Image (cartoon, rainbow, N blue to C red):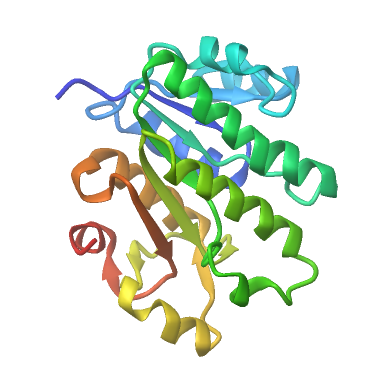
Length: 229
């Protein structure tokens, strides 16, 4: 197997950092990943401290052509960028338009594999409409997911629940359990398990291509979970 070359947009975020570390260590299956970052300090950290390639390509302000130039030659792109609570406007310029520009860039340079981190039940307005603090975020995620589904890319839309920073359990809830767990108030998914799922999805395209996958922690090992999709 030729090692996969993966570009990670949002590499400096908490999921992104976990994913970078995981792919960097797995030299048998992955080439050194590329981090796309928004400022020189982040670029310097990835190059000098993490030891991977880093492109100074702000997903918010770069053009489609600039993003395309940065990711050209890679086999897959992971979009885990987010506004991170840094202003309402950035929800739309990062989470929504940043995702749309990345889709267009992938199409321009012939990258078919695209994985995006969204939010649990983003397509279901009745689930999130009354969450006034998150409504705009969910509107952006729903619209971005719609763009992804209507693209020709081999996408996987990853929809985790409320993100936690606990250590990876390596286990997820079955898709059939999701509604029951949410109704019972079990709404979390560890960021480390989101990163683990993304890595396994990259390695198992047949099972995960053109699918929307909700993620909550549960009792099923990730590899078994992917086989059930």
